[in-house]
Length: 373
Figure 1 (cartoon, rainbow, N blue to C red):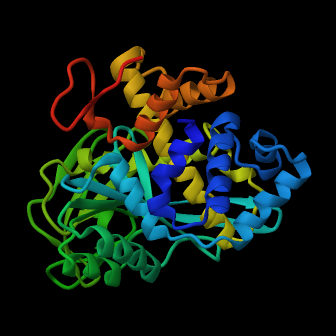
Figure 2 (cartoon, one colour):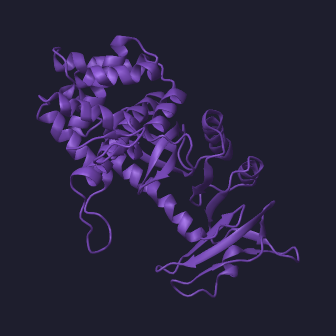
């Protein structure tokens, strides 16, 4: 079975498109992995077709202009790729933005914290500059909950943008724990009814010191647990949660993994900011293509690290490459230099579809598949 045919079988039940459109999507997915670039002009050159490059480019333009995406179906596919149906996880919420000409492109992304990165599940392209509002955040979480429920959510993590009475109250009403960073000058109301900046509770901390308060404090209309850390820069990192976390600073540190995702989608991977598409609905479709390519590459990197050659750990304690880049380099090299061996093509299909924890090394366990180099 050819790789493209195998991908077609896998995606047929998820995308809901006819053969022509599905083939175009798969062609773009493979071209994206070969090229490591989402710019359509460049993507058309790596797109497998007998047509001339201009015709290929116009075909890609029509695809993003005309094809309707079912983002719930894509989210279900991504969740199935990692088999998260019976697992617990932290969600993280953040934006990535850039400017192309006079257009400000701004994408609010909801991801699942996973092995040093975040796996994108839902995203919303904001028709504005700056921060998301509370209604937009709630809409994104509601969509996730409708599809996957709330029982697996250990908590949602967010930076200083993600504050607000209505938003926090909605999360508490939904029984979703949150841990959100606050601005140092955010006002709290003390027991005498006086307002003062939240930094006053942590002003005595020295660099590297932290403190978790033993009683809740009132921020706006919400009663929250507060913790703080004095950073090397002298700045205070202050966290608010609607429940007491045993290690709030350690848990919040997982939030940074979504920054790694954005770096992979941009300069360290697929160069999202160079897409040159500026229509909001088309950018949202591009994100779906990038999300699937990212998941495929990350899963491939996990397999290579586990089964073929473990990544070296440098003196600073981090691996020499991210799992994403390790896997992407392997996929790119394999696709560019041909795949005469059917075993190689089956391997890539397994890496796309099969959850990483069910790919075992050596003797096959029940419900798992053995996959070697």
